[in-house]
Length: 617
Image 1 (tube, rainbow, N blue to C red):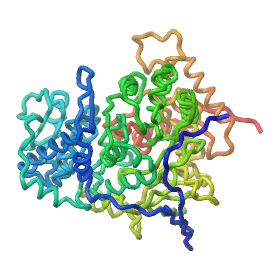
Image 2: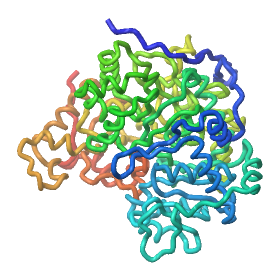
Image 3: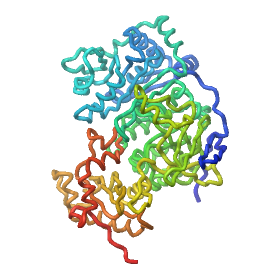
């Protein structure tokens, strides 16, 4: 018998459904959106007055000790940096770009830009540190046209600065100035606040552009999504109403999610600020060794709400299972676990429930959401105990969701105060993103948990643009098939590209998880090339066995995978095959690897193609 659920205050899940003659539906929350500030920096001023000594931000220094900033100290530094930015003549047309990742200086500079009404753009670190041609970085900076660029470590970002930042644009670094370029030290980026700062802050309103967040490029080149003050504040008020426990105590967050993405930079960082909480910057990453800093932080800091992507939970579970003290600390005051960004495996969900029961004698509510960079981000939010992953909840207060029949699914479109006004300097792209009623076209499909009980919420049903028809006219749901592949082949597969548009059958390109493949080879030499493992008979045999087993479960051509190729070349960021978030661009992969796709459909298939066994009727 499962233990009881930890009792926390949650908001309403009531919804209203309007059924239109054209077959579309409009679903709204039953609770209206409450009042909220016009600008996020008013929250900083409020908490600096009411809780001046409370820790707002914390980050470990190079010796492992926590560097902390109180609300009062943060406000003082933000105002001084804002004065320095205004003195440089920065403006909406010449804002701030931040190339490096999460740290205290990044936070201060971003808040100072918002305080002064100057847009800033946090840029994916992959564009500077992983890319070799810096093409996406040049594209982003070309759209944003910053007047000041910040990179914490000037030496580490030196090549990117030289390749993509024009001469005449001021570069600010925390330390390690790059060779061959004059820079400003971050410590010198201060000035005495004057009436100019106060006047600039007073002029910031709900429609002021707070930041430009660039999409990951999964459907093309990155687009600069305009994020206004209204979007940020309204979204946090939505979250406060949905997760009512945020009003009961200031949240404590331990978070690694990067601020150039809306999940980390809007949803999580702003949640701490809006509710007077404490935000501990986690330098861990969701992978085997990368999770160790996260584990060390969670041994010291017990979060009240914890956010991660599924891969992060997968990396964390073994440590929670092996360390009772860590387990007790982690669950000790946790109001909710939250995942987003991808589907969560049922076995990870079940493991976390079991670990919570062992640690504190009760389960903790495990929730999710659906949104995008264009929605600030949370639009649909699950805030009730559920018994399976994948449920994304109901529209948040203030959000209207329109469901339009499309390709045998329900296409999701959204309207509300958290929806972007458009893309920075891309008017045609902006126009195409909205329908005739002004609803933003998400490009996602959803389905009811139970059509007769809409308050139970919705389940993500894939990307409309990825689905296709076979030559027979049969629709193939790419997200459903991809999810089945990942679950069935775990842990040997890290991702899958699905092919079959206008073909006779479905086939896939498999991105293998090389460490898991190596585990199948008892005598694999340490110095042997990684790709060599894919030619081992035992690895090849295992993929064939699993493909055959999956084929035996198929119920028709839409979910039967006939052929597969295990890729030796990893997806490339510079070729647009992979986004900075690590997600695959299906379209780019199919286009760049068109020759391999033809191999999948060759008759007879070449030796490197795996062919599923035929099942006799």
